[in-house]
Image (cartoon, rainbow, N blue to C red; front, side, top):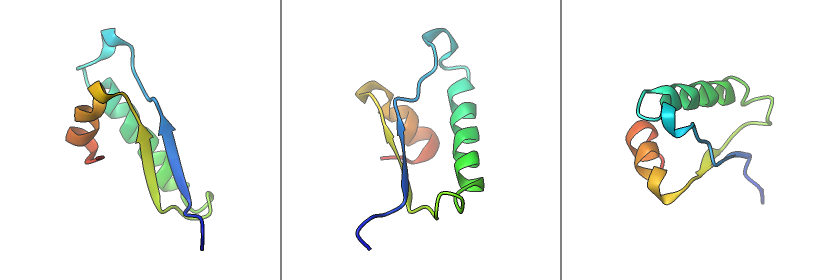
Length: 67
């Protein structure tokens, strides 16, 4: 196997006026839940990656254990 089935989330963001209110966390949880629910339709799933800005890395580490 030379390829691993994966999903790359690119620059997920919420407007600044909605930050620190839980909206981003709820949206990401919903997205990850949908990915999990449909993982077999994607041909299985090895991992999910997130491209983000350096200032948002603490959000992903704190809420989702992404590193």
